[in-house]
Image 1: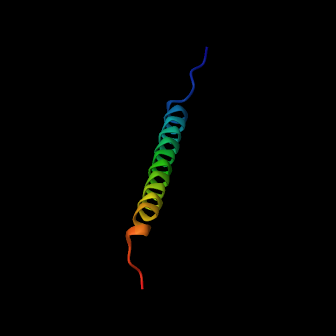
Image 2: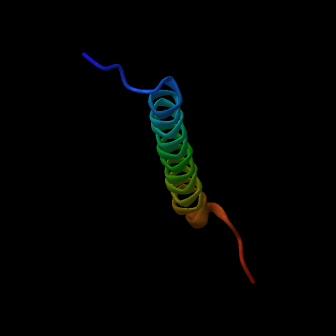
Amino acid sequence: MRQQPHLQSATAQRLRSWSAFAIDIHVLMLGAAFGLIGAIVIAAPHLRLP
């Protein structure tokens, strides 16, 4: 029974962690965008624009 090279499994694990990190960053940015849009929508009627 042959074992897989350690380098290949470590690389695959590193790629999985990077993809999870990228997904987390995108979810965070999406949440921030929705929060900003929500704040503008809530504050817009209270603004006195010329």
